[in-house]
Image (cartoon, rainbow, N blue to C red):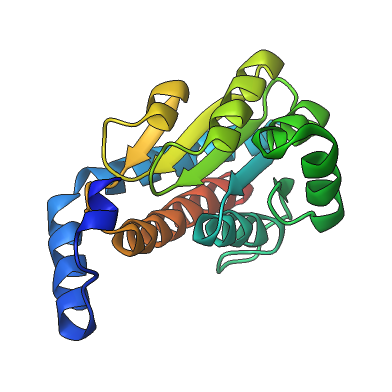
Amino acid sequence: MTAVARLATPTGLEHVRRLREALDGNNGFVEAAVRFGREFAAALGAGGRLLAAGNGGSAAQAQHLTAELVGRYRDERRPLSAICLSSETSTLTAVVNDYGGQQLFARQVRAHGRSGDVCVLFSTSGRSANLLAAAEAARECGVRTYALTGPLPNPLAAACDEALCIDAPFGATVQELHLVALHILCAELDACFLGSQS
């Protein structure tokens, strides 16, 4: 059982207090998010694509990221190639049925991933077997990997090329800061693209 499961879940104003503490205690995540945004802009600008995945609430984060890239974050720019591996329901059920849950994302990475692409894996625990398998598949395909996780140490952060790790005891707080990081990296990515277009 992890530390996240042992602590009583904060509610009401206590939830907000814990979130403020996490924001104040995780200043390094801003620099990582900015760097990710610049690196994603370079990869996508060179014709690469972004693959993203997560489980549960982290699947929603992955889908949010790809929506911002294919659509837009705020300012107009060209659409960018981004695929959320956790939102293809027919593919997901086929892979789970034929290959098992651990291969859920790895098989898709092998199908879509090419050298020059990036793969972003969201996990509050950093221990999901299907995301670890996806990171391994990405490495085999020459795809650069990025993890957004909860506290260190965790296997997913260790398995990826880059990691943005939130030191917070609650999964909800980790996901809330992942959302902040996601918006920071999207803003930086757009600034890179808009700067090159002007």
